[in-house]
Amino acid sequence: MSFTNGLAIVGGLTVVFHLLKLAWKSWCGIREFVLSKFWQVNLRTYGQWAVVTGATSGIGKAYAIELARRGLDVVLVSRSYDKLQMVAKEIEHQYGRRTRTIQVDFMDGHSIYHVIAKGLRGLEIGILVNNVGMTYSEHFAYFLETPDAEQKITQVINCNVLSVPQITRLVLPGMVERGKGLIINVSSLVGKRPQPLLSLYCATKIFVTYFSQCLSAEYKSKGITVQCVAPFMVSTNMTFNMAVNCFVKSASGYAREALNTVGHSIYTSGCLSHAVQDLALTILLPDWLRMSSFFVTKLRNLAKKSIHGRRMYKEKEWFSQKEE
Ligand SMILES: NC(=O)c1ccc[n+]([C@@H]2O[C@H](COP(=O)([O-])OP(=O)(O)OC[C@H]3O[C@@H](n4cnc5c(N)ncnc54)[C@H](OP(=O)(O)O)[C@@H]3O)[C@@H](O)[C@H]2O)c1
Image 1 (tube, protein in one colour):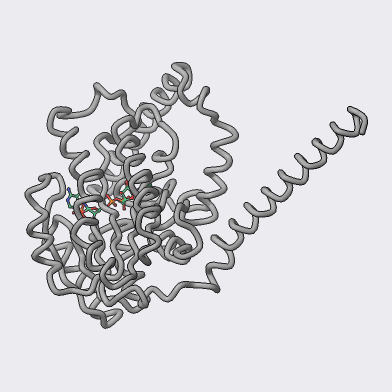
Image 2: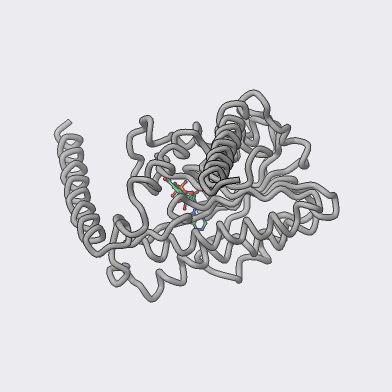
């Protein structure tokens, strides 16, 4: 065989390999985001109860309601008593499911977990959604601009990081005993790649991503599914309830689509729109650009302008409400 023939064979095999890879990825994407709508896992088979942290608004509330709609009783864990009662009533009246509420503040650290353990006692928990999370600044900001940094750093780590393995520790033994269970950990798209000006937040989210992936590898042979969900923009209090459009999902739409992906993927953007945005950002905003001082300065200036715009808008709204 001549040298050129050898090169042609290697080239041909490389092309075939990449075409097969592309075909496989496309099939996985179609299965995860399109077929999953018709090919759903029956979530009731995991057990009677679901536990959702941060369940009184945004994505957590949407997960709690969607799980109830799909036939599970729900334990709501959050910090505001009144909001917990409201969501519990909504679930009981609309879907006829049982609820339990546990009021804790995740910022308080390890002292709250005996309260949660007590609240979960005696329940057959099939699903855990580790959703609770917080940011620490209204906008993209330098690390040293973190307000009340000394306290805030601990609070963010307690809420976004500590909560995930601590609640998992409480729930997982029962799941392993029964040989089935589903743990959904809510990370973020910024938990996939480092994002300057969100340094602490994105570092807490990469913890969630890695913890989920390792836990999945450790426990899948024992019948436990661990899924990491990494949303991009969802309209919630955290994102100032921004308008829903083809890029920004509503919390309820997001939770519904994300729950459909269970059983189809252990790491997911949660919906097609966010998966496409993830792909676009990987191509358009490579690491070398995102991590450059030039980009960081530009992003900071843009953030400043958008805060100014938001404040002006809020003031205008306030004055017009007063006039009415
Ligand atoms: N929204 C997005 O675009 C987006 C994108 C990527 C990832 N995420 C992640 O998705 C998760 C949910 O975010 P979200 O946008 O739905 O947030 P959200 O609207 O602010 O809701 C957060 C929920 O957690 C509760 N909570 C917050 N801090 C708490 C604390 N210290 N102790 C107890 N409960 C607490 C809140 O209770 P209250 O009702 O009392 O405030 C609320 O129920 C977070 O992990 C976030 O990092 C969100």
